[in-house]
Image (cartoon, rainbow, N blue to C red; front, side):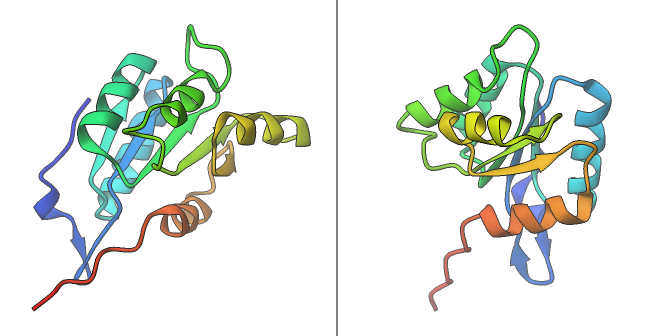
Length: 142
């Protein structure tokens, strides 16, 4: 798990969403981290459930990108656990899904996922989903 200094992440005068990428495919996880950081987002990457829980609780990301199935985990087990915990319940989860069906979407919704993104990734669309899911930055007071 890694994160850069949050102060370095401003884009056109506004803070960008801090993102936790939970993806056990090393290449896809690295690609997501690289592309999101290049856009200016502070990014953490977890490759398993334990690291995902620890990162979510400790860093309180604005959005979680969550792979449908992590090695050794039942589909959406991580999403259910994150939504059950008082410290992480309010964090929006965008499900990264390998198959698209109404049944798969229903299972993701029931587990607590707020949005869905089908693999292979459409990075432009994913950025739009992140912007829509992330809470609006608080207005600065003078």
